[in-house]
Length: 307
Image 1 (cartoon, rainbow, N blue to C red):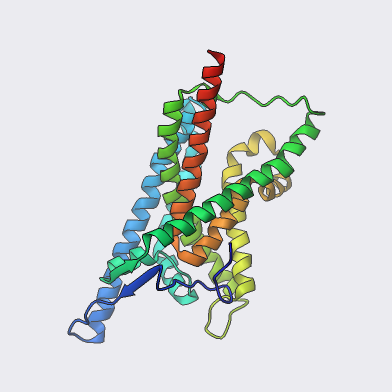
Image 2 (image 1 turned 30 degrees about the vertical axis):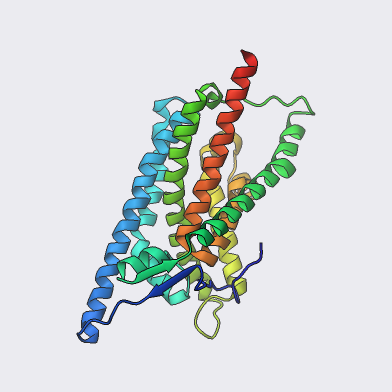
C-alpha cells in the first residue's frame, strides 16, 4: 500500500476528510483563544476518559478470558498506572501535535472546534481495514519466521508441545463476544496512549535534534519515532511474561524486538501519520476482532470434531 505522506508528514486529503470552518463569530482574538482553549480542554477530557475507561474494561475481561483466574487481576495494576500517566499527558500531547504537524484526532478536534465535517466513511474504512490486514500480516510473519523457530530450537525439534491455554476451553460464543469487547476497548485505550500521546512526546524529543524548515520532524525523524513507539507497544505487551520467560533486562529488551505487537504498532503508527487517531483505532479494533473471531471458529471446529 503506497505511503501518501510527503516528507513523512500526514496528508488528510479532501476526498477523505474535509472540514469547513463555521462562520466566524463576532469578537476579538482573545475571545477566539478562549474558545479554542475550552474546545481543547473538552477534547482532552474526552480522550482521557476514553483511554482510562478502555483500560478498565480491557484488563478484567482479557485476564478472565485468558486465565479464568480473577486473582491475576492484580497484575493489571501496573498497566493501569501507565494508562493514568499517559492520560495525564493528553493535554500536552495535543499541543505538541499542533507544533509538530502531527495529525492527532482530526475528526474529534474538528467536532469540538465547531467545524462541519464532510468526509468519506468508505475511504476511511478502506484505508483502515487495509492497514489492519498489513498489521496482521506483520504479526503473523514475526510468529512464523522468528518465534516458532526459536521455540522449536529451544524444545529440541519438531515435537513442540504448546502450553495449555485456558481460553481454548471457553465456549466459542464467549470467546467471540468477550473477545470483541476486549478488542474494541483495547484499541481505543492503546491507540490514544501509544499513537496520540507517546508519538507526540517522542516526536518532540526527536524533533529537538532534527526538524525541517517548518519546525516539524523530518521523514527520518518520523520513522525513528514510529519504530520507537512500536517497540514500546511491544514491550508493554511483553511485560506480563517478563518474570517467566526473561530473567534479565537485556533479554527482555531484546525480546521486545520480536514481539508481534511491536511490528503491528509500527503499522498502526504509519496509519496514524496518514489518517490520524480515528483510523488507527478502527484498524486496531478490526484486526483484534477478526483474530478473536478466528479463535472462536477454531474452538468451535475442535468441539464439533471431538463430538
